[in-house]
Each structure stands twice: as structure tokens, then as C-alpha cells.
Length: 59
Image (cartoon, rainbow, N blue to C red; front, side, top):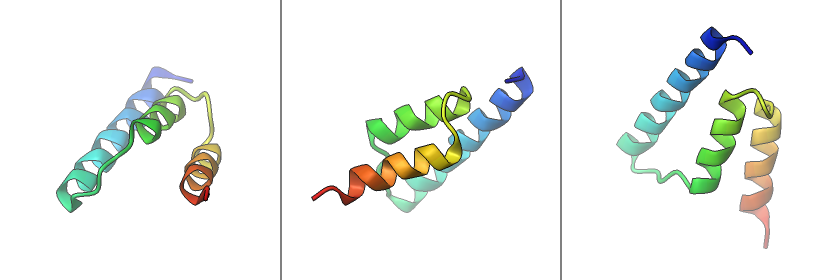
């Protein structure tokens, strides 16, 4: 992954975190870890989504 793509992804994460904070929505450590993995290109956006859904639908 190019440094430019990584920088864009990090910017997107900062924006998402800011929006969540404004809305009063806490972001879990797990979600932050997945986000960092996505930013680094280690997982896809779909994999991140699936992992978050799986952890939040466990009963």
C-alpha cells in the first residue's frame, strides 16, 4: 500500500472518530484495532465490517 493511501485512510479514521465523538458514540478498543488493521491494508473494509457485526451479534 502506498503512503498516500495509508494517509487517506488514517484521515478517514480521524474523521469517523470525530463524528462518533460529536454524536456521543463510544468507539471500542476492538473497533479501533480493526480500523488500524484496515488502514494498514491488512484487512479489507468488508472483513472489518463482518468482524464488528460478529462481535456485536454474539449472544
